[in-house]
Length: 597
Image (cartoon, rainbow, N blue to C red; front, top):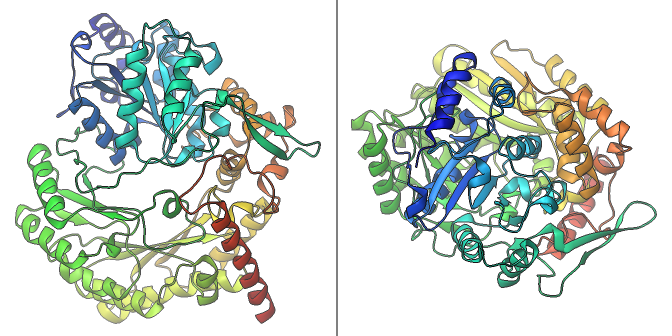
């Protein structure tokens, strides 16, 4: 089924002239190429970022394995770097699935995994290069179905003109349903609109933007999201896997042929989070909490190791140390994999008394660095964001890590939270320097501590969704203030790019009217905006200005809790009333904090 003509053209005309050409040829260990004439249907999983980022995403491997096991031909495509995009355009060649070099517009279904709002322009790049009409309304009855899901789609309105159907919630049970229904209706003579209506009318977790119309008031706010058909859901709810342990893990993951962001086996041990941090979108949209057993995890990790040869295994969840049988899991993993020379990575650790046990549990495993996310450094701000941690646990855990040979600590913080004060910024420096001094007490030299400070963006479906983003000037001041307070040379402050955060703000919190600016900025050359070398913030701000998009209004104003938000028709488990209650509690706590200063 290989499209040899297209492959030969790509290899002979483009690959010798581009950076990292191996990412465009497929053929990796464990990749699956099928004859499209012998399968139930064809699906291409489209990751709107580069190969090196997309191949590090566990969810892509999960869905790839799942759909191929179900008898579909499931392939992969990624956003090309600008040099490869230019080569495709120069020679009139389409973007294709890596397994068979099939152009994207020849698949039954094209499914985008949306992880980051900044990547929206990459969706347009991939559609256009793949020969798929940019606007959903311009696609024919049997043209490729374009769907999207993931955390970056929790406010689907900016991509509404370009996506046929959004899938909310867990992809494992929902993706096969959408694909099968679409394939069954192919060639039926039904219109594209009727096909979409039948899909979304049969479930409550699929959203087709064409069936909903935002109605605006004179002041620009939304009056309602009006449903245009009675046979589609009034509100969309997430699809949820009940039995996570019974849902197969990918034990033959595709092994990349070039270096990627995370070259390792990933095993999801738990979905959801037991905590309810107000800033965190994931803990809200991934409820309820579900686990895999220790036996399932160890067996899958061992089989994956045998099928790949990786020397590192990452145990994934929103809060890995909150796994209910955590100590037994880590002990068992260490017993099995340390003799094999395989490291165990724990990328998401909550700061509890368990922290000081982790270095011992890992035996001879990872020794390079410990990654922790305190988010804030003062107790009253922790109460405000609802992330209760104890500094004693943090410091004792770091001390134990240093005793056992760990070299450095990376800390994740936020700045720009509601009610933030200079004392909160001082606390970041104090915590980082305290850990550096603990390193000196234990080893005789200051530990290397990196404090990574992100700019807070209030996300949809969180209690902070009504809060505005701090101004550009404030964030510039905060970053400069933090760097000026550092006194120990082994402590480094790394602030996230403020201009990119400003763009993330409007892409996260905008409505369907902002889609025109997204398309125009893409036409003007916006590409790979998550990459520093390609991000052109001036292009974006000029586009917003030219199109009359008020960035301040969308991003920085506080919104009353009775205002209709662009994503209000997308529901979460606890509902909007829960978010309002938490927002109101937050306001009371902020007032108390301000009064105490």
